[in-house]
Structure formats: C-alpha cells, structure tokens
Image (cartoon, rainbow, N blue to C red; front, top):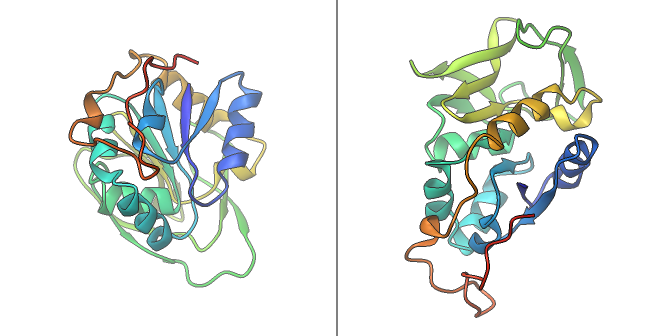
Length: 206
C-alpha cells in the first residue's frame, strides 16, 4: 500500500494514478498512518505550509526513520522537503526557481529512461546542484528535473497531472520490493495530536 501525505497539494490526483495501476493507497496525516505503507508520496503545494504541518504533527523524525527502509517520492514542494527537512535527497534547490507562474506550463523533457516524457511545472523549484549519489533520470534544458538517490525519487514537476503513469509505476515497483514496516520508525512518538496512541493494535496490510 502506498501512503500519500495529505496536508496539501494534489494528493487525490496521486491516489487516482495509483488506482489506475491497481495499487491501494492511504492518506497520511500522522505518524501512525505510515503503518502498513510500503512507500510514501509527498505531493506538491506550499513547502512552508507543509513544513508547519509536519512540525505540528511531529512527523519529521518518523519520516526520516521510515525513509531508512522504504522509498519516498516527492514532487515539487515534496522534493524541497526531502532535501531540506528530511535530508534524504542530496540536491540544492531554489523555491520558485523558474519565476512566478499563474498558469501551469507543460514541457517535453529529456529522458533516456522515459522517452517522450512531459512535465507539468507549477511554480516549480529548480535543482541547482546534485550530490555524487544522485542519479538524474530526466532533465529540462540540461537541468535536472527528475532525480533518484538510493530508494528515493524527486521531481520538480507534477507527473500526477498527466496521463503518463510510468514514474508512478516505477515507484510502485520500488515500494513493493521490500517488507511492510512495523512500528520501529515511531519510537519516541507516544501520542497523536488527538490524544490517542499512535500504535494501533494491528498493523494494516491493505
């Protein structure tokens, strides 16, 4: 089952893509929602707003522990947070790197892995540098727009807004190759913000 961080952004559109691929999803808003997930999508939106939600729900550390064993896929603001807050993508990013955009822009991308790939950019971040362990999977005018580091993916654009499901399909393959998580990444997180235990009596398996 793929978890989708559901504080802001096009999380429902990501869910519909996975539904087309026959993959179950759940919306993640607190640490215990990660239980039973084999991967996590961090959608776009406003990175500062999402960051406040992550801090309020005490999710940064649980997400970092989750990422030790399971893949995370961040789009737009999600990529920014993977770089700056979770520190699992070694890329230097600039918010709104292509300038303010009132409307989305759809552009053809260069990719040997995904021929014919197009990207929808909406106030997109710009990747200015990549660490040695970062693999560039797609570029736009020579600049990275889709990157992979270890078991994690990051895109500056919005693949969920096109009919091309190949990137999501790749992420499903990455997420379903491992074991379902237990509660090890919830250590030191005792309660959620509704006062209940974050550890359910049984681990969800879909």
